[in-house]
Image (cartoon, rainbow, N blue to C red; front, side):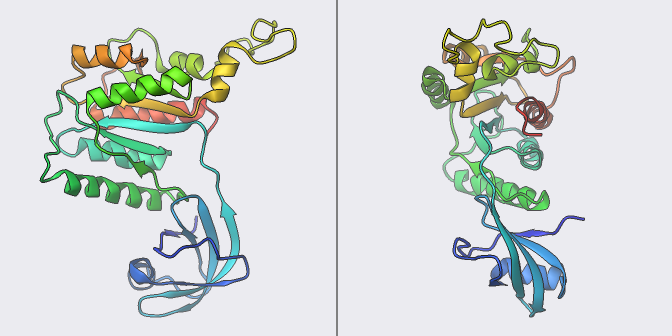
Length: 284
């Protein structure tokens, strides 16, 4: 069984293998009192930004653990980053999507106030709602033993989302895909095209010389894929994405894709798309 992960508030950059570390505060209290972790057990301490300490417990207190640091690893952030643009949804289906997406490896979550979202983050509840999403991200990352806690972006509207897509697609650093039941192209095919990753049955890129110039320099999809930094997967609310919104997003450069033959809930579509993208991008 994998070791439990804890995210202390302490800066971990100066901690080295062979050193000592005291896990205290809320995480230490949880480890010692709730989890009842004892001497000799292995735990992992992470900073949420890629740094992972593997430690052995050498002593316990009522609200802290004394640790011997066995190894320190800094995990690089995956590239391209996978970002889930999740429309606000009722009955906490948006939170269900965020939780599962975190377990599946999402890097950034963007709450989207879509036109047809029944739930509204009004001024008096926006901070509270964002805090709830942050808590879900942290808890799900901890449960799945992640060294990286996904980042929660600011609440966005359709106009701001379209502007973000337009800016990223213009320089090739971003690819955006709107998951839509009426789309004609499967998500796997869209991902293959925008990332330059050939499908299992496709001919390897450049095998016939069509995608390289005389000097062997990358051209076409290979060159585009080399500049890609972020992939946005956009999920609408229960009532779907309105036609004006859809036009705004596609005019900005987003592609439409369908996940499969069945209509998925707002809580399911994003995680399903993330799983497929993780396989196709070689993250899994």
